[in-house]
Length: 151
Image (spheres, rainbow, N blue to C red):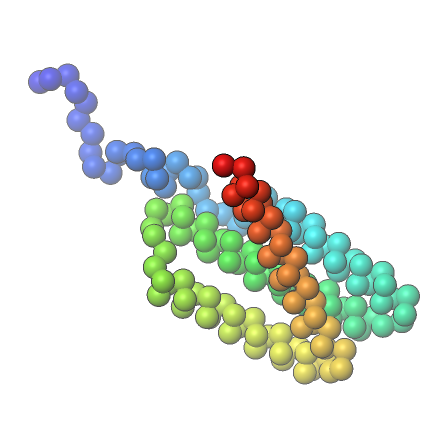
């Protein structure tokens, strides 16, 4: 014997091993995305604050619903990505495309269905969804730009 320990293949760790990244849980996603959740709550409250004064409660509810749908889509996407990353798998183009297509198809059917059901105020749902998506995109892009700027 040379004195080196015998380690089974499944016990070896590498820098990208799933054990190093922790486990994927929805609670972890909620903690990681707390700024985004706060922005969604602020947008919803602002819709009620502004439109409530104009006696447009149904429109405010539709906008808040759109923000909620956008947040649900965002958190679902983050959870799916966290599961892929912590499992150590590499997401393939096909897997990414199918997941995105299914998620956006479900989201679109729900959003358009609610918009038609509550027409004309239902258009606010699509507006809330678009506003949330824009703000979430900015919140994701700004840290990346800062990181690119400071190597």
